[in-house]
Image 1 (cartoon, each protein chain N blue to C red):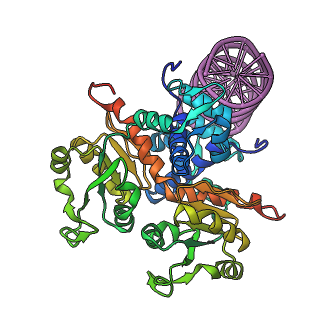
Image 2 (cartoon, rainbow over the protein chains, first blue to last red):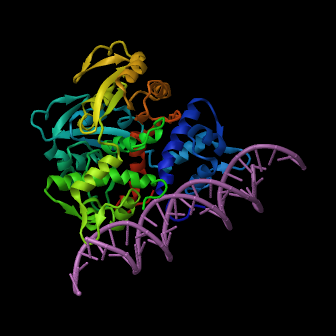
Image 3 (cartoon, chains in turn orange, green, red, purple):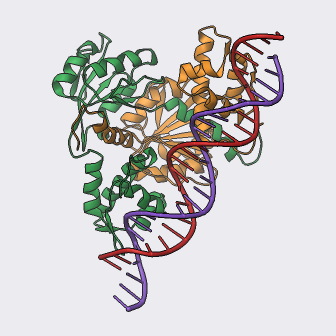
Length: 214
Length: 214
DNA sequence: TAGATTGTTAATCGATTAACAATC
DNA sequence: TAGATTGTTAATCGATTAACAATC
């Protein structure tokens, strides 16, 4: 019985289960047990059941989970049955690449605009969009009902952009800039920190060395 | 006194402390207390001290931490005092953008090559590099002593690429493809899952709505 | 019915927080 | 010395794992 709030690690894994289920669906598999999910995701069967139990009872003892119906339920739980509009702030390398990224344009997401403050870029075409002056972002987001903002600008601009996004009614931010941004009330922020990922790999490098110690 | 192995969350934060220290350094600040680090990073002072204590004693009671010397120590601990060679497998949108990303070319990292299996791309220039046939990756990596591989290829190719990287002596992999890859022995793997990040944001969206419930 | 697998409860594990004696 | 701040120990909190009665 779902009680209180689900732990964040469980929410993170929901996304993994969903991907796993969709793959099974594509393979024509109609039923999957928690043990079957473990085999595909590496997440232990007990953990799978515990995680799902935070959101409801989806399985049948002795049988497992119906792939179709669990998929549908997870999509519902994660709010992926409506389309969410996304904008990108920062038309540099990373912003441009993400603008072309399938995942940000398919399924539950649609890319509505990309912004920059560089006059040389504004008006230029990027994929099927035109780069818009960032000063127009709040108005644009309000009118288009944009829910999600992606920040790919330099660190020193990130906080101001986040504030501007909040002003435009954006309620979730994915921040790629290497800086902490203070989330306004009612705005969820997640960070993807590429430098951090690389540095952490370096930390664990010596452990995998044949012998030598640092 | 450092005992046993440091918890992964602490290692993750080490990278944040390092960035904070470098920023302080740039501002000409010579000393920082754990409370000062809290103010800059949002990580509580107690947590800061606990984290650092896994690696040694770096502070002076009553004074705090010397910015210069703690910076130097963290760089050492994280293995960032040597340059690590990086290659990218997959010259699509994301791979191309990352190839131009400063963070993957500066400081402790240098980008040595970018690979693809698409004949139309092989030989083309990307930034200051030429796109190389991925079949040459193991040889290249062995000869150039590449330590880190970044996978920006589609999911169905990811595992094979990871295996090929291991074959080439790579010991750390940053995987951007939306699939689990099984790490070979002695290879550290970290995943950056952009779709997951977006989906998790969606999950938390309703919570920030003015009122209405899903 | 017998076998399989769920949802849940209790036990374990690990990480964070609080508090303080040691010390600059 | 008095004030500040460390490193560490003990207390709390939360998440994972183990185990099993309920049930298809």
